[in-house]
Each structure stands twice: as C-alpha cells, then as structure tokens.
Length: 164
Image (cartoon, rainbow, N blue to C red):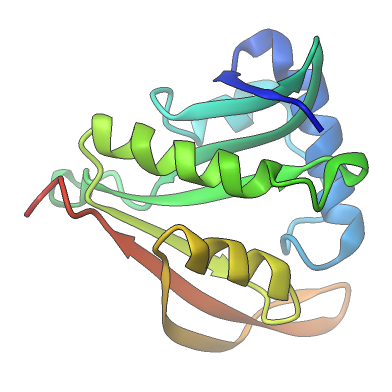
C-alpha cells in the first residue's frame, strides 16, 4: 500500500476520530469507550507532533504526543498514541508513523517517549520495540474496561539525541 506521511490538521479530525473509534472497537487499543470532541482532543495533545498517513486524500492512520505533566521539569517527556485504520493494518503504516513521530519528537526537544499497551496487543508491542522502545514495567489492573480489569505493559524510548 502506498502512502505518505504528513502533518495532521484540524480538517483531518473527522477521519482521525473515525480511526480512533475503530481502535476503541477492538477492545485492545485503549481503555476509553468513546472519542472526545475536537476541542477536548486538541487541548490534550501537543501541537508540534501530530502526523497522519495518507493515500491520496484518505487518512489511513495517525500518531500524536500528549504531555505527561504540565510541570516544566517534565517538558521533554510525552506519551505517544498511534492508530491505524482497520483497512490498513498490517501494511507498515503504524511503524512508519511511529518512526516519524520519534524523529518529530526529537526535533521538538522531547527526550523520553512512553506508551502503555495492553499485553494482548502483541503487534503494537512488537512495532514499538522495532523503533527502539523497551519494556520498563507492568501495571496490573490499571483500569476497568466494560467491567474487565486490564493490565498494561509500560514501554519507553529514550532519545539518543535530546537530553544526552
């Protein structure tokens, strides 16, 4: 599948939201059960690191960063999110987005990326490892999703460029 990576814009929101809803529907992508509106989503993500994968005008996936804290001491630490449309999974889009997000994060001065992934999401864990993330912990019963307690694998990627 041919695709290009591009900066996400507000006009991409409807497609980004639809892909997020597909991820929610899997039950293995997030503990969230619904997508927020644009204003809430926009306020909770860094503006400097937002990417989409496109085939023509169609958005096939997206990747963004969220601050882990508003405190200045943690300004170089962010949590990443990557979602790929159901129709485009298994095509390398997730790995391409995550790799580009790593580069964009370093350009933005981020020295540490973190992710929390359900252990059942083996593909996501493997993709993260392929771009330099490592497992740093495991949280039991992190949250309940539709009455079922879910564990989370904690992963981290430390920049070899920023904060060295």
